[in-house]
Amino acid sequence: AQSVAQPEDQVNVAEGNPLTVKCTYSVSGNPYLFWYVQYPNRGLQFLLKYITGDNLVKGSYGFEAEFNKSQTSFHLKKPSALVSDSALYFCAVRDMRGLGGGGNKLTFGTGTQLKVEL
Amino acid sequence: DTGVSQNPRHKITKRGQNVTFRCDPISEHNRLYWYRQTLGQGPEFLTYFQNEAQLEKSRLLSDRFSAERPKGSFSTLEIQRTEQGDSAMYLCASSPRGGQGAVGYTFGSGTRLTVV
Image (cartoon, rainbow over all chains, first blue to last red; front, side, top):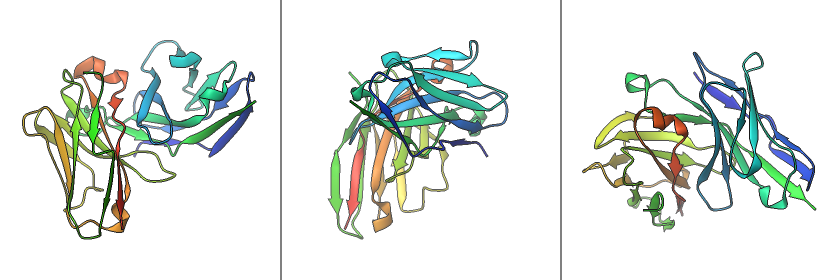
């Protein structure tokens, strides 16, 4: 079975400081990895993805993520946090099961609440 | 067409009643997904359509749940004889086919169901 773990329920950081939200995964074969953000009472918004290529992936709103195959991790980072970054962040892995091995079904972690304070 | 649209945004129903939710995907996307999200959890996959064909269903989708996408455009998710455990946010997402599908799909704002 494929899975994603987000070990921190909440991350607190001061505005202007760097932030890291951790994610580890378990998958057979090559992983496709994603980060989504969710604001209260809203759907999920796509931030960035790793498919192949450079291990450092840049995404929306100044976020980036580093793929580490040996540690099976895909941590989300931002050099300087903003109060407006406060939200719920989800890591997800593409599930290669399903009809024909495709379908793009994603398996999500349980989410990490990011709180950025002044 | 600016995104994935879900209706209603909120639904409160009494236990035992039937409810139906609608999802309108991005028009050029031929793949459509339903997920369920309970408090404190990540979204859990329910089912997936490619055009009008329902290609995969999760074991989470009991016999009381049915989803359709009759013309390959909008989709409906019906829950019969609702139970309190069905209370959750139901999310719909869509994606284009093929290589672009790995981009990550677009979610709607969800329908929050409360069963009382």
